[in-house]
Image (cartoon, rainbow, N blue to C red; front, side, top):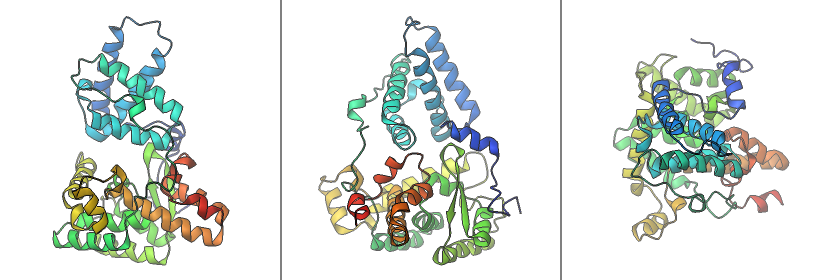
Length: 337
């Protein structure tokens, strides 16, 4: 058993907390990161715009993007950056940086990308919906029926990892990559101390409270881990070898893409079939975080309405309260009751 023994003593170092306080993404795949930075260094060295006022900011912003690319995609060549990589980073920035800062960062990334020799083009800021989305217009939460049906589909396919993901993401509001990094020892700690310690984006650590119902889910998967021969230091669903977490994340995302029509509500599935769906009406893993957020908001509101949003924001691991509004349809109406 590792150092997961006291909820007041988190199993992550103070150095990690310092990094997250700066809003930086820690480098996991350092080799790929250094390779990408060397490429943007070369672009910078051959640039004729040495006196450009935004030059240093553009460079630092693009280095942060390189960290994201290295750790999430293991990309080797900066010129191979595609729109999907860019938009994934945009979603990350929406949760972790102010809109004005985000716009500057994206301009910097495009500056280097346009000079990389890439044949790909990246969207301009005005096409990326960087403005704050109003709560209540996009409800991405799964219905209870969709959650139940998804469990059945996963079970019938023998996808234990997908079934675990459905349960733990919906019960604790985890990001899918947080779920993939969850270890058996984290569940052991949660069972003993009623707190699930999660290491999120930027290595930011947060404890999520565990109630009686959630503890039963924890016990269920501790039993699974025992039968599967997993040790405390092993990942719950990811393989421990190199790149195991990223491979598991991609596997779960592919499972969702190929199977969601099997458990989506009829209205949602019909819109997708007719090509009338909005982007956020398609069911996704992230939608389970919305389900958690709305349930948790209702729970806390009954006891302390004024603290509900703050509690949900903490549980979701948001740096900005505005990011939480997107998860809470009809937030304004609820808080005014």
